[in-house]
Amino acid sequence: MQITGSCLCGKVQFDISDNFDSFYLCHCSRCRKATGTAHGANLFATKATLNWLKGQELVKTFNLPNTRFTKSFCTECGSSVPTEIKGKLVIVPAGCLDSSPTINPTAHIFFDDRASWEDKLSDTKRFAALPK
Image 1 (cartoon, rainbow, N blue to C red):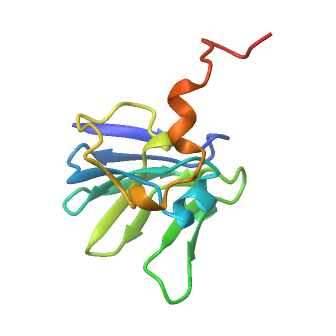
Image 2 (image 1 turned 180 degrees about the horizontal axis):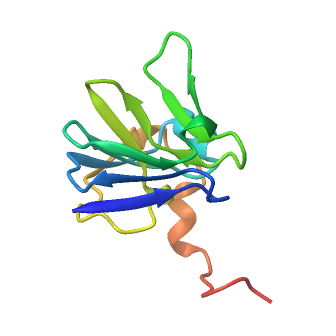
């Protein structure tokens, strides 16, 4: 089964086979900085084929020197999009998917590196939409 995804502005679109090996919620400081959130949520696939439907020329990949950390994004809107490590791996940020994968999160990783305020999230008020 193919699932689709896109960036926020819609200028980058892709599909990928729903053949993911893992779905990690990463709490490392690099993922927090790259996403601006409490954790990164990324799907990993070693056998999936990523097809760029539109806007591949707008995709830029940043590789943090002397690390294995990499992040691809739309140069128009800044949204995270998949990263291809040729012949090895496709990393797909879960938030850029337009349809749901069949895999659920596999594990929290680098959990001991989580933000100090993250443990208090369960006590935070919840609203169905923007509060008034």
